[in-house]
Length: 89
Ligand SMILES: [Zn+2]
Image 1 (cartoon, rainbow, N blue to C red):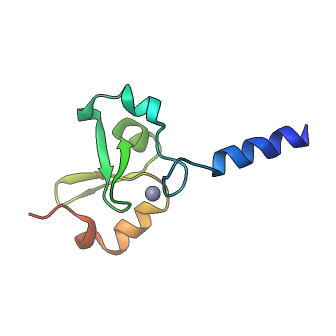
Image 2: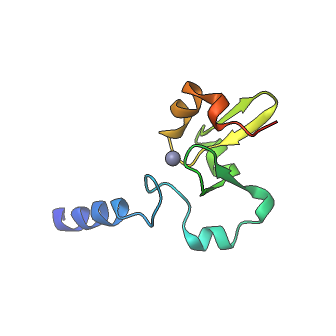
């Protein structure tokens, strides 16, 4: 079933406008209350489901504020320049 696997890979990498295809789907977003959502500070404008990000370890606590990330690439970027991505005081 190699052809089928190839189809799945193609579909996964086709992600709907997110940085890496890990962002929640539009359908998932529609069902998630706003207070359970956050915006990825590294990939500005990318919505993140807080529970999903925490389950995956995609968050940081910085100066008393928690930040959630849309994908594994964003944690290291935040670590490198937290002042750049943190909320303005
Ligand atoms: Zn990301």
